[in-house]
Length: 76
Image 1 (cartoon, rainbow, N blue to C red):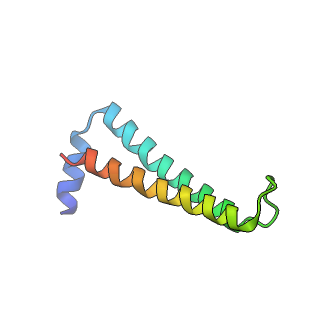
Image 2 (cartoon, one colour):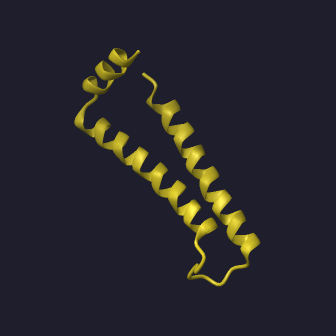
Image 3 (cartoon, rainbow, N blue to C red):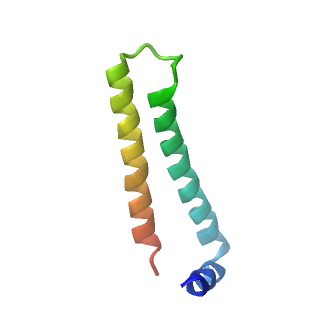
């Protein structure tokens, strides 16, 4: 399985590798941003705690939707 993944990555063009890195990077960015919104004590925007938790969960959900779409599009 690991050899198949290695060969699959090696066959990708430079553009495809770049898009792979960008896709993973944006998943991490949205996920971490969602965690920051939920757990940051001195949040710079004046929001009620319930709205911050909801917004954070929305960001984390969006991160996983992006990841699922990214994995679906990358299957070759």
